[in-house]
Length: 117
Image 1 (cartoon, helix red, strand yellow):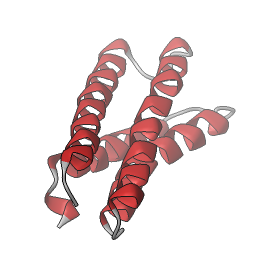
Image 2: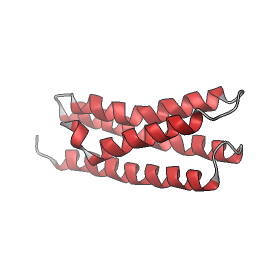
Image 3: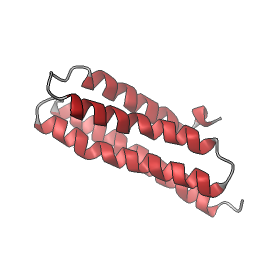
């Protein structure tokens, strides 16, 4: 089951933490909150959807989209930090978690590529 994958659990945890953080954004920053929430949630949903696919190529495509969504979070978190919407410690925590998730996704993709069928 994909729910047992460490990368899936980390992705859901990250999205949950981001949802909490963005709920505190002041009025006028809905665009940033919405985009950051969508990108963070997209990581775990693409992992789940990819895991439900039958072909290796389909799975790889969704896992690659998940990795792209993780990368999309980076400039959004940077902008939130620059605008003072998240503090320095939270900014570094999110960046660190995204880096770990990205490496795990790369490992998942590489493992899929190396599998015979």
